[in-house]
Every structure is written in structure tokens, then in C-alpha cells.
Length: 426
Image (cartoon, rainbow, N blue to C red; front, side):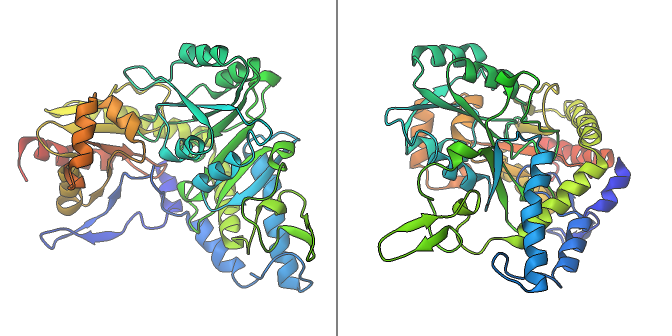
């Protein structure tokens, strides 16, 4: 798999350290954003010669750009194993996709309930919290979803839960949820399921369909910037009938067939939900990235990244004072959260960057309730966090997240750096 390192832009970038020396940069922050594929950048550069405004244009470039944009929907449905009743709506990112879905779910049910979990990114928590009655499904001490608690919640609400919103893989711990089993529970009690696929799409095959109809996924969303494709686009995929309900949450150009002083006739789905000039370059980049991921093979990627995960977990355990948070390596994407006793997470990340040229993420990763639970913080601890104006001193973790281009040698360099930090040799 290391030959696929050649697919990535910037893997050999040389950056300055604090002391002025130059080193090759190591990126272990792929859960936030991945670097771009060279194939993506090549295609964008090629396509830029033919790029034009899409829809309603008869010029050659407009028709070609429209074809690339519209044909992308079928390619995306194929990539995620979509159902025949699904549609693809282009948005800016996963956050916008979830917000858009929140305007469609429960539009006919004023008293509906949405269930989500303790392990969610804020983007799969806040849009629901401010529109519906939201209840939370617990996780165990290691941060894994409690399926018994989920079923208990579904039973107790007597059928008024209309949606269960759950992540496919946690952006904090990397745990992969059994989403098809969760789907079966949802459908048993009359609820739909939405799956946040932002952390899984570049690492493991997604299939919305299932041989058991009760286990199909109703809605998913993901972002291109975590799939080696910059330029800011995301997708919401799901049931056409539900996504077509009501008026668009973003109204304007491209969303209408007819406008008069007296009435509006909205466009057909998906254009009805894609107000304004669309991000054609972003869609082109996403399709190029999907083609490259498919060429490499998601099964190959998953296998290699699992090897990286196991190697890192085994190697880093030898470092004194390192603390992992339920550090198993099974059924996870390649993410490791940790702390070093006696050294603030922000300081660890800063030293890794300034003295070793290693990029990681630290903090609560837009999942504060989940991280607070894993850190075993009390309500009093959280009150003190709110009072403390210095965010660098707030509790958090350091997160390693691997991509298909990372190497075992890079993990060795990380181990050397963390050893020095743990021993105070920096």
C-alpha cells in the first residue's frame, strides 16, 4: 500500500521547526481534513478549461459542465450502494446536509422525537436539538453505543421517534457502529435512520442497501474534504419522497420553475434543494476522488489502515505515562485518542508540531459531551471549564488519525517524539 503514497499531494513537504531546521512533515490529522489526491488536482486543472455555469446554457462548456455535475449523482449513488428511491443533494459539507435534513424530517409530525447518541459530533446533535425533542442514547465506559438502551428508548416513546441520527464511525475514538443492526431496530419501531458517514467514507465501503430490507440506511451524508478532495462540497443522500417535502430551506436561483407576483412553482428534486450557483468544481473533485478510492479499493485501504492502527497502538503502549481511552483496535477506523500524564494536550500537540514536524489534532474535536464522558469529568469540572477563559488549558485529548498514505516509519518517528515528551526531554 505504501506505493499509494505517490497518489497524495504534499507527502514530501519540507517545513521549518522552531529551531530553524527543516524536516519532512508528517500528517496524522486526517480525521479533520485529508490532503488532496494528485488525480483530483489534475482533473480540476484539466476541467477548468471547460468549466462554465451549468443548467439552462446551450454553450458547449455549459452543457459539458452540466453533464459532469448531473452524472455525478449516479456515480455517488453507486459508490454508497444507494437505493432506487434515493436522490443525491449537493451541499457544502456534512453539517449543512444534516441541517437540511432537519427541515424535512418530522415536517408532518409536530410532536416527533429524534434520538441521537452520546458519541456524536456537534453537527449531528445541534441541528436536531434546536428543532425537535431530542433524547440521547448512552454509550458504555469505552464510548461504544448501547444498543439495549437504544431499543429501550424506541419502546418507551411508543412510535413517536421519527429519526435516529447516529455516526457510522466516531471522530474521537474511531469506533464503528453496527449501523445496519441499528437500522433494523429503528424500522422495527417505525423510525428512520440517518447515518453521518463523514469519518467512514474514505476508509471503508458504505452500502445503504441491504439484503434484509429492514436493515437499509434511509439517509446518509459525507464531505469531500475528508476524502482527498478539497473545494468544499458534501452530499445528502436519501429517500426522494421525504426530501421533497415542504419548501426549500434555501430559496433562490435554481430552486424554481415559475415565479410570479402571486405564486411560486418549485423545481423538481434535487434542484429544488440546491439554491444558488452550485459548486461544480467541488462536485468534479469529489467524483475524481471517488474514482481514485475505487481504483485503489476500499477493502485494500481498510486493511492497510488497520495494520497502521495495530502497529501504532502496540508501539505507543511502550511509552511511559501515555494514557489511551479504551484502546482496542477491533472494529475501528484508524484513530487513536490519548494523553500524556502531566502534560496538557495542547502542549503535546504544540511540541509535536514545533519540535518534530508532526501534525495532530487536540481538544474535544467538536464532540464535547462525548470527550467529557471519556475523560470522566463531573458537572463541577464542566462548570469550571465554562469559567476558564484560557481554552488552551481546558480538558481534552490528543488525536492521531491515519490515512492510506501514512507509513510505519512515520509512526516510529512519532513514538520517538512522544517518548521524549513523556520524559521531559524537549
